[in-house]
Length: 172
Image (cartoon, rainbow, N blue to C red; front, side, top):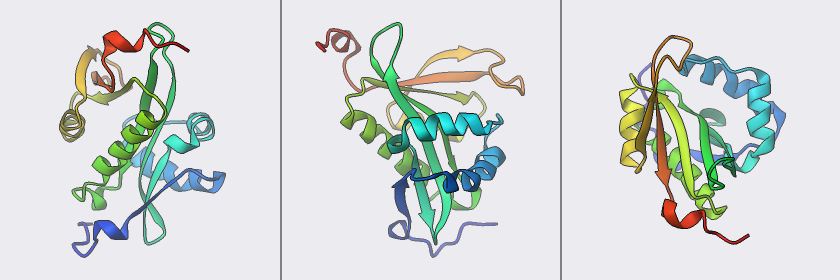
């Protein structure tokens, strides 16, 4: 189905995860759009652990996009690291910049919470996602061979929110 040309960005609203009833609504969308299957436990881990970092895009009371992630201290560097676990927009709503808006809202939340960097992985064949992330300032950090179950390679991308040489010196 082609996108509805009458949709305006102001008709789309964004909210954080609020309750379990949202999980069954996003699982089929994520399963259809991402190459890796996720169990209910993966959803619960992110959604209940970091509900304010799980942002849903709604149009006509239906979820049409989502970004799910977390923020914690990286074990090796000690940096406050945001992680985008999943970001999906239904096909018929793409090209409306919803994915960009979701990603930017996530980035803004991580900044508000004192994050130093954000990382994610995406398939090396997902050129649209790579263009989006690079346009937001993410840089390819490494290529991971056979990362996905399909056998496809992944790129790990990172967005530095603060100078990496300064942030590990933070006082706590």
